[in-house]
Image (cartoon, rainbow, N blue to C red; front, side):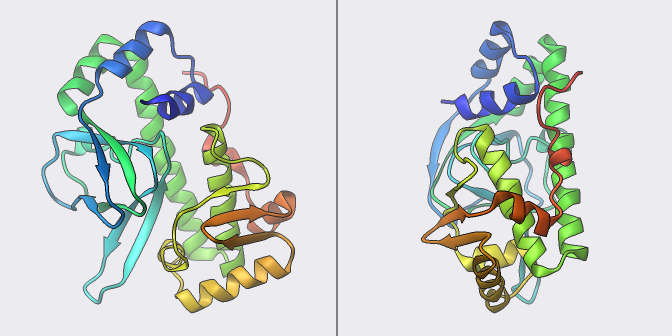
Length: 239
């Protein structure tokens, strides 16, 4: 049920049999969520965190004028809101961009596990810090990268994150979102996104069509993005 989550953890940390059993034991209700469903609303009290098993979730904020900014994408194996364990509420919403399967993890079970297994407390603290690193990279994109580099950076990031859980390789991956969703990730209009995707396609780098990112030149795409995966803290990380 949570193999993608365990793969994500094991990519960076050693997880022994007792720790794995503890992780499995804290899982709560498993649910299927329709695309377009907000599963967490900003400001609501929270007593559980959400782990994504399949599909794609996002964190977002809406403005009064109807504009939406997506601030991060969650892929299978991610906790969408582990930080709610300490914050108790979120300053943003969490939305299912696609049909998703999730599992809810009660905060009381997280508390019991991290008290019994201090190493897991460090590992999940690392995980929330990794989320913060991803947010900072998105901030660089939104603030300073030109449109083509901005989109290229996202495609490169997702290629790495999805490859960790076996859902991508150097040639591409499924990405079941629309160009409109992509525009809300990038802080661009849908017209600008369409033009930017055409630019990347005509440069022989990547094609986004039929809900799939087809990578033609991964090294070239990374050069356009100035993509350095160091912020994703890949490989085994000492604690």
